[in-house]
Image (cartoon, rainbow over all chains, first blue to last red; front, side, top):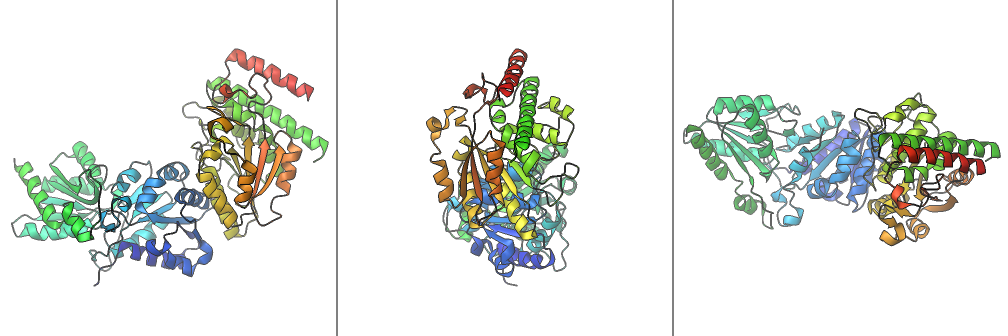
Length: 313
Length: 277
C-alpha cells in the first residue's frame, strides 16, 4: 500500500463525517488546500468558513460555533494553531469548555524544505499543559480517520496532530482506535519502545533491528498523549524495566516528558527520550531531517541499548 | 422609547451601580470604573432589548451577550442577578474561593454568562462564531458584544470585524464602551485607536455614535441594526466611573475597589446624582 500523509486522511475523513454528522463545521485560515479541508469545503460549502490569514479570530469563532451546538474542526498548520493562537485556545476554547477540534497539520520536522519557521516541534507540550485538553497524534492514515471520528464524539477540546509527509500504514485493517488507550503493536519483554505519530513506524523498524541482537522490544503506539494511558505504560515499564520514547517533537514537554513524569512517580525505570534535543529545525528533505535530528530506527535502537545498559547497571 | 421605559432603565442602571460598588468593595478588588460606565448599556440590553428567559439560560433562540471587556464582570453579574439568572445574594461572594462569580466571567460557573472572557480582544470573535451558527440554524437571535475602547488596540478585534462584514452578520452588534480611558491613561495618549467610527466603517460595518448613558439612544441604535446587510457598531460615549463624581474620569478607579468609607461616600453621591437626574 502506498504511503499516505495523515493530513490527506484527515481531509477524507472530514468529508465523510460531514455527511453523517450535520453538526460538523470546518474552519480554515487560507490553507485549505494544504490542510485538506478543501475537500469538505467543496462538499459542504455552507458549513465551511475560511477566515483568511487570521488564525486568532478563527479559533475564537470556532469557540462561538461550539457554543451553539456545532462540532467545529479548526485547521491550520500546527505552528500557527498551537503557537500563534495558544491563548485563544486556552481562554476562548479550553477554559470555556467548548469542544473545538483543533486539527493541526504540518507538525514536526517532516514539513521539510519550508524550514524551522514552519516546523512545529513544541505543539504537543503547549497543548498538553492546558487543563482538559485531549492531545492525539495518529501514526497513519487509518488511525487518523478513526481519530477524527472519535474526536467528533468527545465533548471537550481536542488537539489532533497531523503531518504533511506520506507515511506507511502501521495499523492493521479492522483496527479499533480508542482515545486514551495505548495500542500494543509488538510484544516484547526486554525494552519498551513507546512512540507517537510517524515515530511509531520507526519503533517497529527498531524492534526488528534489536531482535537480531536478541533484544525483544515491546512497541507501544501512544496515539493519545493526553490523557496518557498510565496503566499500560506502567505495566510495560514493570515488564521491561527500560523505556524509550520516540516523537517528532522536542524531548521537552512532549511524549518523552509525559512518560518521564509518569514513570518517575509511578514506576521509576531508565527512560531514554528520542526527539529533538532543544534546537530548531531547518530546511531539508524529510529523510535528511530525520537523520540529522537522530529520529531514525537506528537511533532508536541505540537508545534502546542505552536504556537496557542503564537498567542492567 | 417612552419616558416611562427610559426612567425604568435608568433606575435599573442605578441599582446595577449600587451592586457594582458594594460587591467590589466587599471583595476588596475588582474594576468599578469600566463597570459603572456600562451600566445603562447593560440595563438597556438585559431589561429592554434582549430576548431572554432566565429560567432557560440555554434556550437556543435567546439573544447572546458577550462581555469582551471581561473586567467589567461586576456590572454583568449585577444585571444577571437582577434579571433573575441567580439570586442577588450571590453578588456578595464576588471573587471569593468557590464562588460562582469569578474575577472575570466564567461561563461554566455563572448562569447566563455566554463566554469566558477577561483576556482582551477575544470576545468579538466568539460572537462572530455564534452569529454564523445562527445563520446555519436559521435562527433569528442577535449577538451583542461589549468591547472596551482601549481593548480595540488588540488586533484580533479587527480580524473579527473583517470577518463579520465578510460573512454579512447583520444580527451582530458590537457596542464600544467609549469612555476614553485605559489603565495607563487616556486611550489617545497610550495608543490611539482613533478615528474609531471611520475604522469600523472602513471594515464594512454600519456605525452609530450615541450617548452611552441614554437608554433611549442605545435602544434606538440597536433597533436600526439588522435592517441592512452588515453588522452594526455602536460607539457608546460614556464616562468611566459614571454616577460617582469622585470616580468619574479618574484612571485610578479602573481596577481599584472602594474602601468601606469610600463606599459609603460613593453610595451617597450616587443617590444625589440620581436625584438631580
